[in-house]
Image (cartoon, rainbow over all chains, first blue to last red):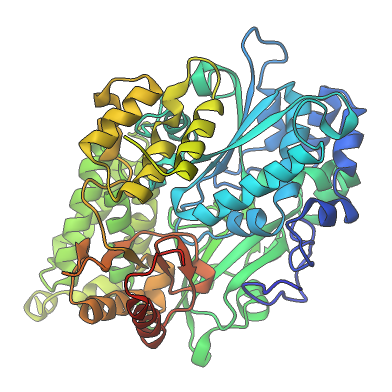
Length: 430
Length: 166
């Protein structure tokens, strides 16, 4: 039976990582093998670890989890030789508000992820890996467990992967509800059975990760892009995107659009074209007001800032981030104070409390924003919100503090009139 | 504690996933899977997981408050989780949560008197492009309208005493 997809594909997509979505039994190993599966692994087996890493570098693949760090470079940080075992850890804790793509990669094409992990394992000389999946994705833990069991039974995991003599064991690991565990060092603590508290860096996970052993940690989508890179060459992948921003990525479009969905678009695809052509524009012909370009941690863009190519460097120049690919579209009726409050309620809830600027900052920002929404806003609150947020930046172990501050700063700066409108009458007139 | 044979097998397999001397890694997965059967993280369960993972009970106890899905009191047989984070908020998530409150007659993290339903306003659960989203136990429901939520709840209610997975 052809699979019922969550949303219809768009003709403007470039299907590479998602090319098997919608195939009959796309989650089975047989389907995977019939559609280029494991060609890349067999090719990688003939390459040296340095050649594999070089190919990933040439591809200009950058981390799809949010930070956008060059993947090949990250791979090169894991020491070649180590007296300790080396581990591969997959971040499948997808929790950045606006992001829902890793779900599809595990649901529709689990063997592509497994092959990507195996290629990384060849490059790292690692023999054990864990897929850390958020607890809410129970059905995907089961899906990955079934795929892993199938791979073992057919010789694509275990002592002799694809008959090459390479050994690799792969396991799923369930989280239990914690946004913070998407941060890589918090994830490692969680994988060790502790509260997910971020670690001081350095040492970086490449040197001392899980159980203080060298660990390569990447997002589901990052690993899922690796088979195509090795199979078709890093250059071909790089050429799909823009300089230093290789390939395609899954863009999750949500909010006020006619056709919300997850679409695979090349890096550098125009943001307005994504909204109006891929996602069918805004319902009721309303005007665009704001866009969260890559998950709720990213500074928001005003409508007039959105006519830009979506790549990491352009978004950085625009004062925001491409992030995790979670693009949230807001029309002209959107009350940005309510948006700011909802974002801050989230970060206040998810702050682990380890760093005071984040724990206290998110709590007070939430309270001030709530006061505004409840009609008790004061004129000086607007500047207080900006000032408080700016004082959180760079003052925490992990990026959660920044993630809470950055969208708030952008909303206060760019949508001051929404705050003005919410001031009690007497204050506004004064 | 004794668990169902299926859960017992799963817990045994969990311990085998991690390297020698790293049983502590199984603490969180064990708690979440065992909670599904036991109903909540009870003091007995904490002792049991600590014994199996060879850590102090305190080391198990201290993670319970950190992870939002772990809970010390049982929720309803059907735990209705409504997302109101931004993607859902923009298309009616908050109104949907209000509707669920009225429909079930309970608030955030409360349980109906008959123990059948509980309600929780949850953070983003990764269904943003198919919002508003609701997860009942571990089943996702997308593009949920108040009418669709009524149907879901009424359907579960009419199932009565039958198992959550039946």
